[in-house]
Image (cartoon, rainbow over all chains, first blue to last red; front, side, top):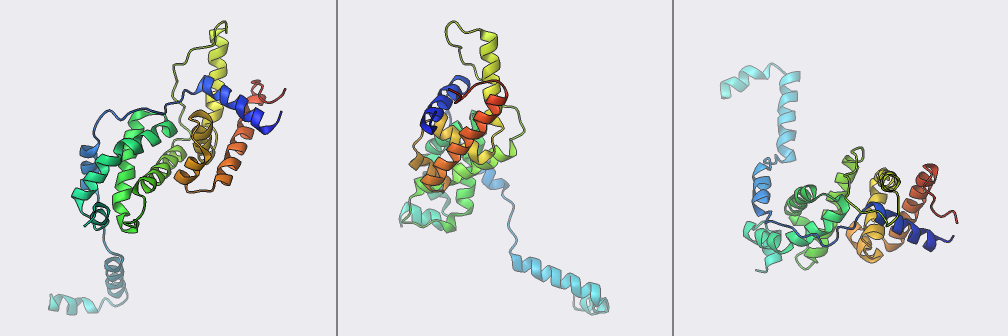
Length: 74
Length: 175
């Protein structure tokens, strides 16, 4: 059998087991779910904010002596 | 300003108009891939969420429909990858006249299980090409691959299925 014949036979076999669902219509408007999904979206934190926080954390870890100065300025 | 330009700048009203214009089409493309209406609804919302998230990448003079279909295909493919180990849903199909219903049901289950075990990227093209009979050109455009690659994936999917089914005693391509 050549490839086309095998493909045709496979199509027939698959159609016995798996019904085509092309043409299925959407029964309702999904906009309310879309709005819910958008409202769940967590606010994104820019990468430079993370970098700044990491820098401050590292500074405190390696130079704990800056803590009193930091509190003084706060 | 044009609707697509407004959408690209993050205008929610423009996005709502586009959503209402295209939600049915995106859903109708996804449902044959995932074969479950509830999952297809969730993936339609997921598709538009990705569309909104990556709106800055959309060119206002581009084809929104094709872009939405491509993102929808990727969302469906991600779902197929995640759900690979779940059992396929039963389908209520009638057997050919004169066929033993028990044998018919068993063969159908074997075919469905073998199909379900295909890797996601092969199942995607095989479903669209062999079950839904979409054109290779449409599949290629939606999946973001060449038509030649679609043909290769269909060929490989058929070869894998044939091998699996022949090992289970369902004869394909042995004549």
